[in-house]
Image (spheres, one colour):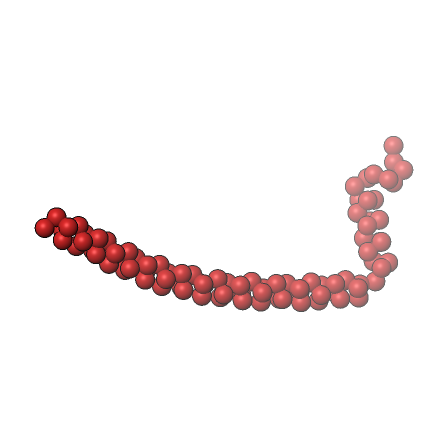
Length: 86
C-alpha cells in the first residue's frame, strides 16, 4: 500500500513538472519572438541614425568654412576675452 502511495506521489510530481516544462517552453518561445522583434527594431533605428548622421554630415559639408571661422571669432569677441581690452 505504501509503495502505491509513493508511486502516485511521484506520478503527480512528474505531471506537475511536465506542465511546468510546457509553460516554460511557451514562455521561452514568446521571449525569443520578443528578442527577434526588438533586434529588428534596434537594427532599423541604427540604420535610421546612420542615415540621419550622413545627412547632417552632408549639410555640414555644404556650409561655407568662412562662416564657421567668423562665428567662432564673433563668439570669442563677444565674451570680451582675446580683444586686447585691459
